[in-house]
Length: 279
Length: 71
Image (tube, rainbow over all chains, first blue to last red; front, side, top):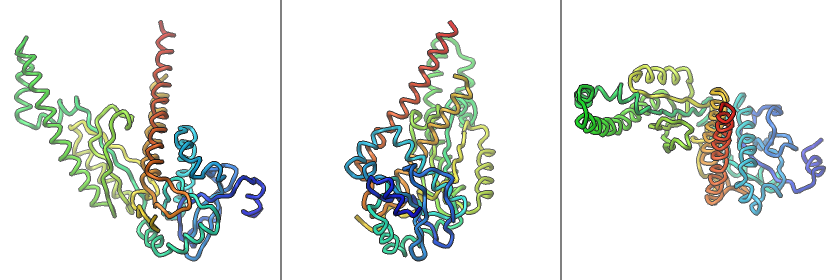
């Protein structure tokens, strides 16, 4: 069945959801592994000149400006669509480089989508060249306060001395000293977080094609009890070398109570132009 | 809830948040016919908070049920 007759069969307003853009020559022949954001339709590759859009039909009732704000407040709907968006792109990423689109980029017709691809061909080709053969990796580092206090913090002489005094003190004095120690460790941790975050970012930037830092997340959002001290994204060509450097960093900081999370490979969401084509 | 189950649930939540940060704040923003506005993205985070808290609540409820069963 052709795309057009399929849409007519569903019959509730054809729109096109664009997941990302690939080079026409690299475009996967078949993309059936992941369900589309509208699971009644298949993900297809629409070639336009040297580029191709990875897209699928969506109901405009579901994705139009009028109904979108309401949908976005629906957590279940949102999770399903966000995961579908990512899954489709991960399928593409397995065989081709891709410029990922932001969530919910929708065109009212296939012609509008094709017009966009041809109008912005140069900028899109440039963005594609930049991510070709590379993936995005995410690195987050966390620090455990207690493990830091009994490990890395002891490199500071004042902390070391006070820790010894606290263990020898008794009663009210012990209380006062341990309060002072706590403050000292907190100050030391503040300093350490800045230093170690900068060190990690510098080391990883050296083995990546591009790098940026992302906002730190609070524990209730990060899902971890430890405090997040660093959040970065990297555009990486040589993954083995990158992971080796990350491993070396972890080895160098065994005593410091640091844990590191590596995520990806992601489509290069953070390394494509934020704006294209203007408002 | 076993440690393993909780771990899976947390992982699920963490990857979703990671995903939301990327899919909503990253990616090329096109002059599509329909694209998300900043206000829309704020809405998404409101929706997401509901999602995150519902995962946390589910976890608490299961823990309470488990404690009840042990008494």
